[in-house]
Length: 385
Image (cartoon, rainbow, N blue to C red; front, side, top):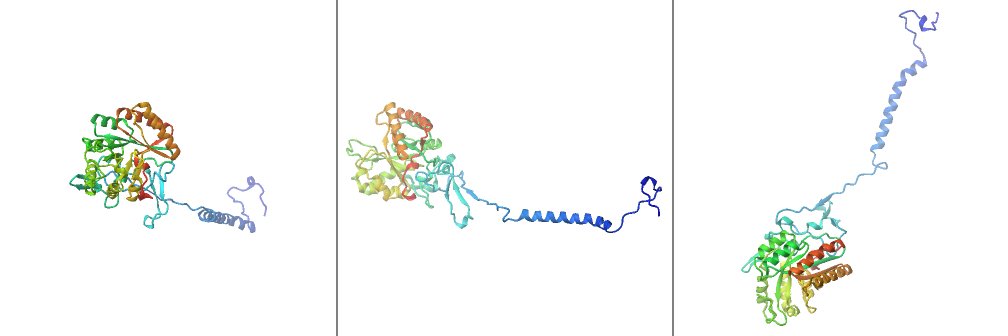
């Protein structure tokens, strides 16, 4: 048979003869084998990709449960200790081994969430009010919450130099009270005199502006009654019942305060029995005590500790001399004290010159790294250890 070498010489319509033998069989099986190789390669790649070990590091999912600040008056009380164990600002992890009931979540609380929601800070917490013949009295809630905690103003919780300033005498002058509330930064703590007028209204105005507030309690000085702190003064000669009656009158004058502060009281504060009666009542009600620092012989520190009362003592009275330059000098002394020991406490009165000087100094002190904090932020609290 003649083999036609060129396609052009092949008769029209005659197909070329296909190759036969081993070569033909291999060509038929080639695509099948190539497909099987591809499938095997894909399967091996998938197996490697989805193995956890040792090729893939497992994901770690951290569950963080933020604290919710309710907008209603009833608030849970947070337990951070900003004055003793502050962090470097921002939220703090305050419990790293939560109970199993929380599902192993880490609880994170922001120091700014301590106390009342600012939108309702002017409203008394009903659970912290006891109705009495004298009027509404502060009391611990059934769940253990204290006015000292619930009515506290929040602060950053950061380490650094802190200064707390208490300006007292609010309520005695309507114009002076309005000026102090309007001019002073909200970080300044305001003290109300029980003899003042419209204390409920001024309390609400102060709380709306963000101030923490305290009540001033008239205590017997050494030259009483020639020097008289005012109506319902607590005296050494009075029995326990009379001391409690006068104290409760003062406590009932308004609400939403964290602590009381002495007004005078050089004699009363040195008597262990009289101080014991007062401190026992404050401890029962969950109220703190601020000593203005005027009496070196005051028994307030030890009696407060014994009765579980949060306590703070003033380092200086800033307006003993009512002169702007003298007041600024005292404030600068507070700043140096704060830088040396971590915090300092100053007390003063709602005089126009004092209010102006404090407002101006506070603005400049912030630029120098001083944090102005409420009095509750620097109080020692026996219940927090």
